[in-house]
Image (cartoon, rainbow, N blue to C red):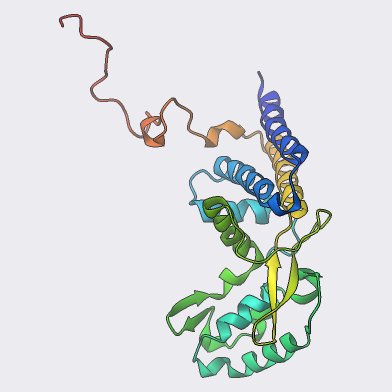
Length: 258
């Protein structure tokens, strides 16, 4: 099998997986299971493309580089407001007052696409006090501003789904929703809470975009998509990697002297 065939086979396998996921019929309350599968396939692609990176880094690199998601680096306004509520840094007072004023204009209702409400990361950085740099010192720790970008929050969202089979926010998504959105939920004190939702329709199209764009790159660069994986019969990957961890005392099967 030549390299072009290997690339097509690799991408076709992932496309087949996603077609199978999309064909699963579930109740709307159980869409989270289909979301988990979509995110797993994105991670499978990321593991091969950025094999030397950590799980979070490679996931974000793949989504940003191949997901065709124009809003990936927008900063989530509700998360930024929540962070500013938790810092005593007076250098942020002017920025905080402006953001709170903008946030009050959201009112209530929904769903609202993130593209209508969330600012670009570069716009936030331009307004950010230079002496504070790119972080927010919270009462109990520190938070990097870039960690409030939607692509970063998608990975955090993924962690809840994959590890706990639950979504961290309330979701009222429609099966036809195809972009991240906010839903307004009334809180006990009468105010409005805005819950960030990554709909299933968005996640499966994101996964498909990653495959399509990765295919184009592989075909143009001639890189073998299987080169980033370590294949073998053992669950512990370092025991499959004989180049990095060579065998010193080979096991030869049964001892004929016994």
